[in-house]
Length: 389
Image 1 (cartoon, rainbow, N blue to C red):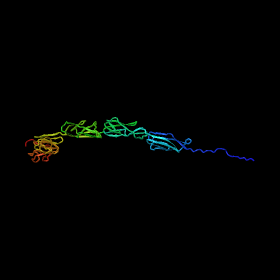
Image 2 (cartoon, one colour):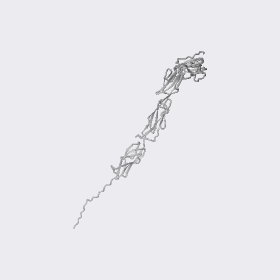
Image 3 (cartoon, rainbow, N blue to C red):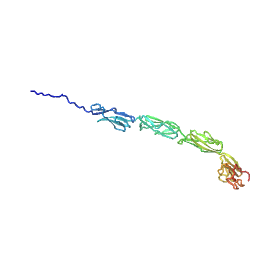
Image 4 (tube, one colour):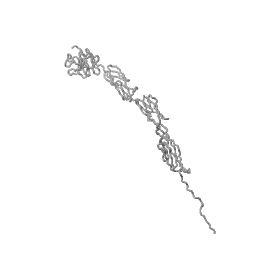
């Protein structure tokens, strides 16, 4: 008998399961980044490949920076410059990574000045101007040395730190250079008067037609003289004193006046007093007079007190000496050795020898100073006689 064995099957091999992709390399689009401005950005892209060199689209990538103070990186690979320096940006996928070197070096793009125009109203004034260099994104760049200069040191000077000082009226350009950048400041010096002063505050004259030159000085806020300032002149009383456009004062008549100098809203004045004789009376050995201001004077022999001076002494005077009492006189009459006068309010006074009661004081006592004539009269004039007694 025959035994037959039959085998079943297709005779094929067992299939192999494909290997799982593993990130083995990370390649960045840029491996060296240079920034010239803070805030400048650049997008990085990472390509991840597996062990077979195939690109792993959609692979998870983590971004990091070695120095956040220099450069930051977002979750999507956007790098931003933060400060000057260097940093390394790393893209990580699994155990693989790729890096990019970052260098941040600000480049000067423009210069910013705290002031581009400076105006001074007084000599000796100062103003400090600061200059700053910035990058393209308007970020300050520190550590840059500034060099300052002026086009005319006779008008304005400038220090190494940018302090500008006015010297004289005019215009000048102050320049500053920082590296390859330069800028200018327009400086104008125009003195503005803040005070006005007269060299003479009070003038007294005794002669008509006399002239005196007044000098007025205007000064700026720092007390510097303004010699070229145009000054206007005026008088408060042209019948007493006149004044020319240059400040020349001329006496015209008796009395007082104010000479006024004006610069803008500023004024300064000088008082002018012109004393001339309104009347003069001569006696036996003495003379008396009244000036335009009503002051009485006597001079000459004073043997009986006929001068009526304030000293009240029998001392002769060779120059006019004011009559005692401070009265405002209308007239004074000099007699032989006595004197009488009437004040502007009509009161009569006499002084000097009174041997025969000629003073009208109610007795025969000599008076060394003006003494009221008895009777309460209102006098227009009293004449002291020159005859013998």
